[in-house]
Amino acid sequence: MTFYVGFMKQEKELPSFVYSSWNLSASEDKLTHPKHKGRLMTTDGGQGISLDGYFEKNPHKKVDLIKLDVDGYELAVLKGARKLLLRDSPKIILEMARQNEEEEKHLEKLLAELKDAQYRLIHLTAKYPIMMTKEAIEKLCPPGGSINVLALPH
Image 1 (cartoon, rainbow, N blue to C red):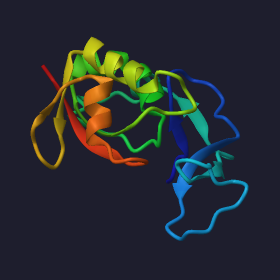
Image 2 (image 1 turned 60 degrees about the vertical axis):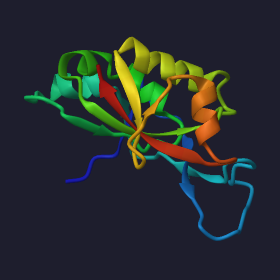
Image 3 (image 1 turned 180 degrees about the horizontal axis):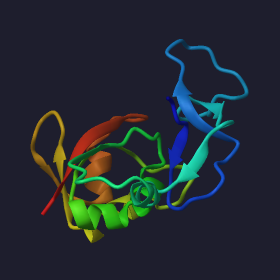
């Protein structure tokens, strides 16, 4: 059985469309974002729920690892996982990019959320610690690109 779920800050209706597909060819159209080149895709048939809400309805022993690949929605997902992060302290693999144009101070807010949950960052491939500042992340990200990080609880 397949479920189409959008994990977010709180349980609510999903937006009708989200940027969630990256065309590997060079073609663009009116659905392609002018900067990051994501393509608007429908969320029809999906439901929005927080990770905390999901695990309240679906009991579990412990979550050890969260892999976030949510194309700019990391902050919303983590805000909806506060109880889970405090209770289970899972490792988190996520992508971090330069400033998100759709939300002012997105990167700073994402880093603050991780700091509040007592996490630190490690570069996923190079394995070195990363300072939890906007400047440190932006220095590591190529223009228009991103880096993969491992967030570890202290």
